[in-house]
Length: 286
Ligand SMILES: O=C(O)C1=N[C@H](C(=O)O)C[C@H](O)C1
Image (cartoon, rainbow, N blue to C red; front, side):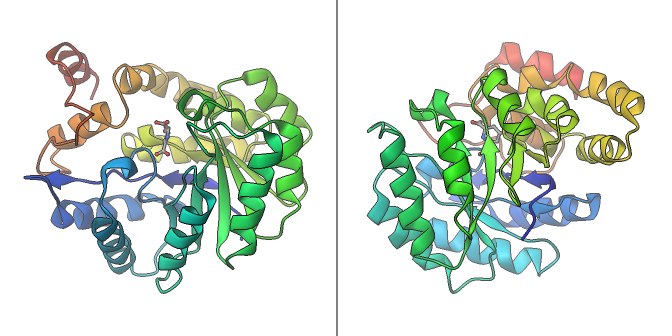
């Protein structure tokens, strides 16, 4: 399937250290009517590292139920042990999900051969579609454009979530993209630039806020209405950097709590709720 537009990497709301499914349902019913292209539970923004295996399946099951076929779902399933990633994605095959967002292996820092084999093995193990997630500042290893081109030749590897943090690498890829392959940004501050260079959209934590504006910018760029898109972008770029001053998704969760979209401003250790200083800044901005 073609992956484009704004895909929401939805937060995992917690209350009293349990997954708050009431708030999750409320958020899903809040965001789908705004025009998001899809949902991605259990990405970085979904605090996937601190969700238990039982909670993982509950969140997938409930997200599918609440979504009720209205938009496609890709689930965050990644890791640095290829066998374990395959075991985990197999759990998904009984649910109505389209695919996985899979972060490149972290900590053990495989070379490009290892990254290629990791994702090739995952792709060969399933019919689910795969969005490869490149985020060197979290994983410690970049996926080079030459590797992306090789991965894009695999039928069910359908897109890249680009958070390379290297604008030169990003622009080189966008200006020489793999055929029949989507490139979405995962660097919120690069959203407008990515679209202007032919990018297909974004998987962005910040689009929990001003969602319609992110979607309007996408539509305006696709209609070559660049000036209007730029005017809208200048509104968003004032807020986006503050949403990453402290570890994502702690700023976003604070904003969602203040907006009444989640019942508790709870995150799981080693993350902590944002500082009072950042709360004061965001209180003015949202
Ligand atoms: O949820 C995600 O996955 C995202 N990851 C980036 C991060 O490293 O925090 C940010 C992006 O907006 C969403």
